[in-house]
Length: 149
View (cartoon, rainbow, N blue to C red):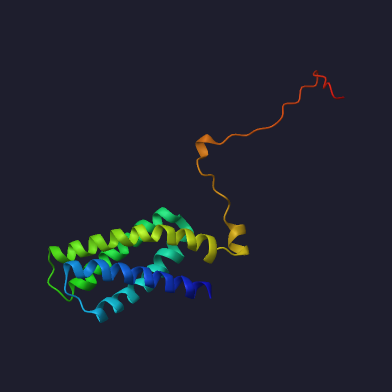
């Protein structure tokens, strides 16, 4: 059920971005945009969200989603229209907006969808910045007398 909800969220995200950017550059029908966003949702979810996000993290999955959407639109829309600067611009700006929208979606995926007992135990917690980690402890001096004792 979690995957169905996340697929719906991703489909709405991609469809909204496709409908707001692609018609600025090209004359694409509504049916083509709906089918294109459905296909891109399935591929990007399987490759970017389930495979790359679980293995390499949010930044790598966002970059992969940018590449998937850019090349997918360039090939998908370019096959219907002559390859021109309009197709390239539409693909680039759409992929850029999708990448910006995917970063919070990946955080949602990591916290809600991909979090189960088995997966959380397998992945060790990574420190945010390993170079500034610090260990603290009380120093025990055998010659020091505690005034409380």
